[in-house]
Each structure stands twice: as C-alpha cells, then as structure tokens.
Amino acid sequence: MKLNRNSLLIAGSIVALGMTSTNASAEVRINGFASIYGGITTDSDQDKLFGYDDDVAFNPESLFGLQVSADISEKLTATAQLLARGENDYDADFEWAYLTYSFNDEMSLSAGRIRIPLFMYSEYLDVGYAYPWARTPQAVYDVNFNNMDGLRFNYATSLGMWDAELQAVYGKFDGDLNIGGVPTASTLENFAGLSLDLTYDWFSVRASYYATSVTIGADVSAIQPFFALEPEKYNDLVIEEDTGTFGGIGATVDYNDWILGVEWVTYTVDDSIIQTTDAGYVTIGKRFDSSTIIYTYSFLEATNDTSAVSGIPSTLCLAPNPADPTQCALLARDFVANDVFLAEVENDNHSVTYRWDFNPAAALKFDYTYKEYSLRDNLPSDDSQGVFTVGVDLVF
Image (tube, rainbow, N blue to C red; front, side, top):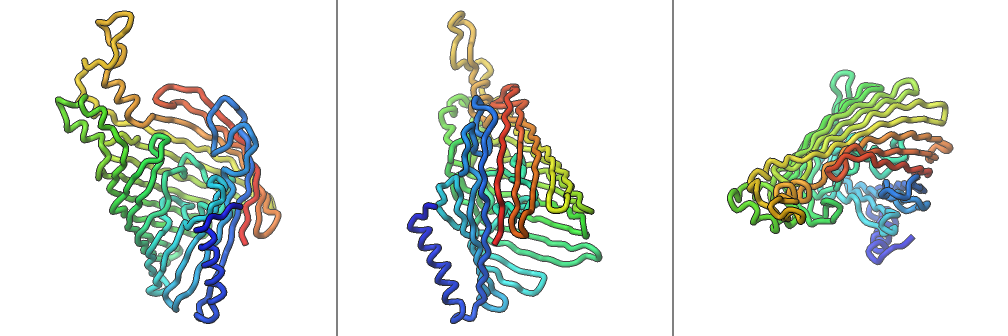
C-alpha cells in the first residue's frame, strides 16, 4: 500500500488521538472496513466496465477504510473517515470530517465535510459488507460526487409503529466533476435539500429532493458566433449559476429471508448541455442460511433538451458536401446538438450476485453483470459487455 506524506500525517494523527484519549477523557472508537475485489470483462473489443478490462485486475474496486469518532463532551462528537482506494494507488484521503452536536436523543447538527444522503445506501457506499451486492447498482449510484462541505440536520423519532428520520443539508461542493469523460472544475453552491426515511419492521421507504446552483467550467465559447441572431440561446448553454435538481424515491422489503428493493432517481441542470438522467433498479434476493442469491435489473436513460439550437440559423453550414458544393454535409445545428451537448445514453444492466457470509464480519461475493446499450453517443447501439468479479467485504 502506498501512503504519501499527507496520508502518513493523517495516520499519525489518528494514532496520537488514540494515545491521548485517556488524558483527554474522551472515548475514541475506531472501526475499519475493507473490500478486496478482482475482476475481468468478457469482451476485449469494448470499453472498461467498472474499471475492469479483459485482463484480471484487483485495483478498481478494492479499498481500505478507517472511521474514527471521539466524544469531545456529552453532546459533542468528532468523526472522520479515512479511505484508501485501489484505483487511486491506495493514497489515503478524508471522505468525511465533521463535528456533531446532539441537542437531545432525537435531534443533532453536523458541520464539516459530510456525506450527502442522496440514496438509500448513501451512508454505506464505501462499506461493501453493509449491502447485499458486490457493488451498489451503478446505473443509479454512479454520480459525480457524494460529499460536500456544509451542515446536516438529523431528526429521528417514532410515528406510531413507524421509525422516522428526517435529514436536511446545506452546503457547497467545489472540485472536479467528470463532464463528458473530462475532469472539469465545477462549483455547486447553495446545495440544499431534504430526505425522509420511514421504517416499519421489515418495510422501509425513502424520498429525497435537492437543488443547487451549478457552475461548470466547460468552455463552449467557440460556438457563440453561431448564435449571432439569438444570443440568449447561447446563454442557455453556458452552465453558470444554473439550477440543478436531484430527486429520488425507494423502498426495501426484508421479510422471512426474502429481500426486495426498488429505487429511482432523476437529476438535471436546467438550460444547459447536461443531460436529464433517469435511472432505477429493482432487486430480489433469497437467503439460504449463510448464503444469499440476488438478481438485480437496472436502467439508465440520459437525454438532452436541444431546443436552444433553434437559435442557430437552419442554413448555417459548417462543411459543404465535397461531391456537390451547393449541398451542406454538416449543419451547425446538427453539430451543436450532437457534439456539444453531452452524449445521450440508454442502457440496461442485469446482475446476479452470490453472497456467502463465511464469518460474522466478512462476506465472500461472486458477481456477474451484463450491460447492454440501446443508445450510445447519440446513436442506436447493440454494444454489450459483461464482467465477472469476486471479492471479500469485511468490517473490523
């Protein structure tokens, strides 16, 4: 495992915190988790899937993490999560680092770098042992960011036979987002929203909604002259303080060794080159003593609103037809719609997972996932790719 200087300082701080906890009269708890996975794809002619290709690899989904929490006082707690991912050459970094003040048994406020509760399994995204699959359904969970700097308010109570938890967040994300496959400097300001979880014995349901002001440093100035007649249409494409929204709903059933789960999300950035994405999954599984077999279907549809290209004259030609110069081979409208807007995608995914809890704190998982496209890079497609993975998730 490679540790850079910052990682060593972080690790040293954790050790020091543990050594000094007695003198400070603070209770320090250190919990660890790890996932060690290997995988290989079934087709050498296709792109990577979950970071794997047709050579066996162990880095893409392997990780090692530590979560440290310390009670500063009866009401104040400090929490940090240190994570080293194989895909990042095991360089360790903070995922979380925040303080929590508990007003009472029901209400608390956290401040710092926090996990955004976007999904049903957001809190456990990095702890593979906590969910039944080898990985969370990526059609839904593969978003650009999961953490932000800000505040999170938690309120947990009982409503008759139901347990309820309300979470409200407010903050900011400032960093690189993957835009069209390219890391791009981005800012999400005034990120605010709510999530509500309701649980009754073996049934739980969840809903969430978030909004933010989005600025992305994607340079589309080269196409500005195309909109000389309607410059306001060009402004619609520039992602500067545009409104971005995220909504999701899901439910789980865990009854008599049967597992059923559904989740659906939608997110977009208004008046921009960013697609509107709808994604969801349904999963069903059955436990057999210490073993579990699960099937999961998921889908993703990312589509564009290209109405802004109406601001480009319908006769503006970028490339004449070599065979007939009086004809146009490439219209500016088509170029902007197909090459400036992020590519439209539609795909379906089928996964079969076998989980064996061979130890109270460890699980062995085998997974085969098959991904097939019906639309890719704005074009109909029959591309498909499968990936086999095997690994161990553990907590300690």
